[in-house]
Image (cartoon, rainbow, N blue to C red; front, side, top):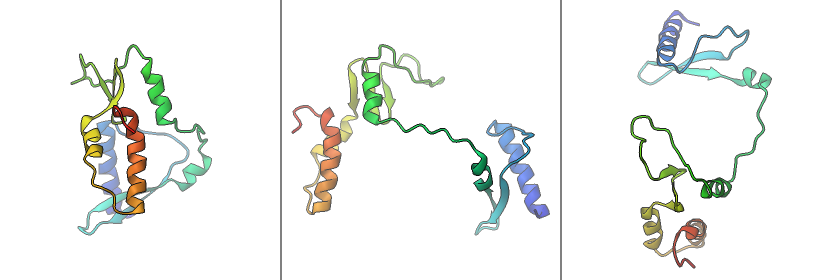
Length: 145
């Protein structure tokens, strides 16, 4: 590593440690660190994790289906979201751009309004896109058919 790159790496690591984003490690292995010069001649950090990925034990858990997550929330008595500065005494929680409250799951009224005011599709691709979008949000729109 060139001395200028080493100096940049040291500065960057001090900043990241200071912010609590990374911590010191005594691991016997680690990723390859390299720098790429940007157009303005500053250095951009690049990390090659390929060797580390080969020895990493992967968690093989499938992503949950969004409808299953909402079904789990529907019966909840207490729903919370931590926001230590602004989060007290809220009656609803926004989760994956959906509004969860004691009344159930709903969506932002602007999303429903956008579907109601959608321009008439003029091609098969536009029709298909609209049907997929409207089909999903239809469960949140009263008298949707």
